[in-house]
Image (tube, one colour):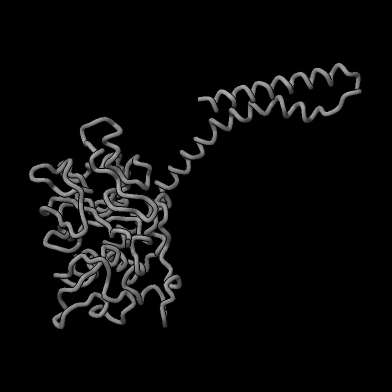
Length: 313
């Protein structure tokens, strides 16, 4: 408050000094100079006030631009998923094989074949994969650019570049199986849990959420997970916003649905029957739910559970 008062007083002094200077120059009969500096002194407070109003507006424009670009990314991901599913028996991207579990990393993300990459057993079953590795199949097989998986509002996330990891005999993006050693740093989006008994196919309910901005209950590359105790779906506006994606300043999240439409929704309760897309069902409670954790799976086929890989410690 004191700082603001000092600023106002300084602006007033600058204005009065500028006006006094202009009057002195006008009545000096040409003996006084410095007209330009006097004009600047008198006008500076007005430009400062204008800036105070204009800068927040620029910030709002920037936030909107991030939101629109992010929505476009998810729309492209959705289209690529449908093409992928058409080529793979209506199955959405699934890394590894049936029975593969969600793990903290791949056996070898630069491996020459799928079995070695995911550590599959001799019968090509089991193994572990990341959430990112399922989405990376769209880079490997559908040619999506790595930047498509980065939201500009998701601080610390950057497009995957194999050269950062100094891989040997690199032949391009299509030779890898994941977004590098730490996929959380190169993918801004959460994905419906693909491992386990309730993964989605193109035959699932069209209203199911399939991908969205990063889940707020997981750490981001440059921010900590939101505090679930501050989230209340039927509480104050601030309590409701606490369950939104951090990438868009808790204003909401871009969500891709199985019917391929994408939209920015102001609350995470946008699944079927007000299901919270970022939480697990807690008994009969699917609106508030409980935070997802590493290894969580949906309660049933109607539980939209969008998760992403936690940042490596």
